Amino acid sequence: MIPFNKAPVTGLEINFIKEAVNSGKLAGDGDFSRRCEKWFEDTTGSLKTLLTPSCTHALELAALLIDTQPGDEIIMPSYTFVSTANAFVLRGAKIVFVDIRPDTMNIDENLIEDAITSQTKAIVPVHYAGVACEMDTIMAIASKYSLYVIEDAAQGVMSKYKGKALGSIGHMAAFSFHETKNYTSGGEGGLLLINDKSLISRAEIMREKGTNRSQFFRGMVDKYTWVDIGSSLLPSEIQSAYLWGQLLEAEKINDKRLDDWHFYYKALTPLADSGKVALPIIPEGLTHNAHMFYLKLKDFKSRTAFIKEMKNQNILTPFHYIPLHSSPAGQDFGVFSGVDVFTTKESEKLVRLPMYYGLGSTEREEIVAAIYKSLES
Ligand SMILES: *Cc1c(COP(=O)(O)O)cnc(C)c1O
Image (tube, rainbow, N blue to C red; front, top):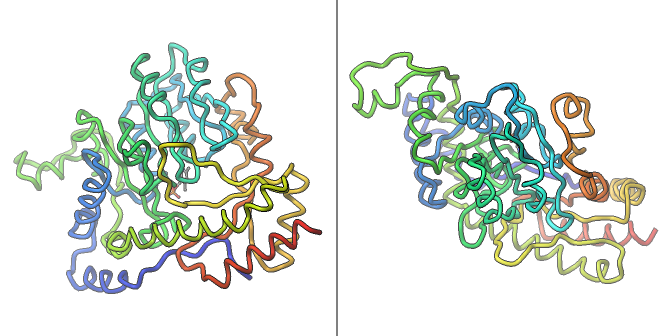
């Protein structure tokens, strides 16, 4: 069976983990965590980055930092992972879902303004498949209405929007290092990126159980004490050591994924030309990270048949999100603004092909051959 995903391994991780173990210091904010955070600050241009146990935690921290309150409204696409919404629902907010664009599956920036009310607090664009949302428009709307923008860049590590790293554009952003993402910190992990200076010091405090421990260690205060609400949102050094072994080869991983992505694209273009499938679209000005390669079939029925055919040929091609507004919790905690023209329709057509760092060249050939065979039958 060719799986849909395998956790990326460069081979460097194990030695860094040993180093961490031998150092006798395994709690968060150690040497490996600092190295990783500096790497992200240098490569993205973000003002401050803080590792977290997951992207979900980074989003929850962002929701706390903008002081999300019951009654606040948060705008986001319905076609996303549950954590995008849950982070704000946990603070009592109402989710306002906006339809997506059929080309990128990202929030339709032209529909956001209609969804804004006096209760709106933030916009959470999700960069689906590592392909950027239309950030210039989104930032201009946010500035006009004084809203926060929190990028869910879980899938967007190493991607760019008009030359700017995803995660460095909104007031804050979240990366994921879950094993299904381009880089992992040993299975689970995340990062909060902060681009608004005024949020940094409170972020450090909330992440450290509501204490000023970070400031204390930098010698900025003479006592280490409880100063605010907070939680324990630091990953261990074992996780950061694993991640460091990935970041040193970040370009290599990125190039390899892009090579697979272009291989699929070229090999499947004849099927797109004959109208059997639709291939991903990357708008002008964007640099993506090959987080995902998806196909769109004609409709829900042809997708179901395709997945079954591929499984019969021992290849797993899962579909993705069931739109949140049609899920039980989504109905309780959210509303859809305007009409769902594309969210349900486009999501029902989409399947993802195996895409991971360890994917072999014979395997990808087999996958393409199986796709041709599945679509003939
Ligand atoms: C993976 C993912 C998350 C959650 O990441 P975790 O690190 O597993 O918490 C959130 N949003 C999106 C869009 C994701 O793809």
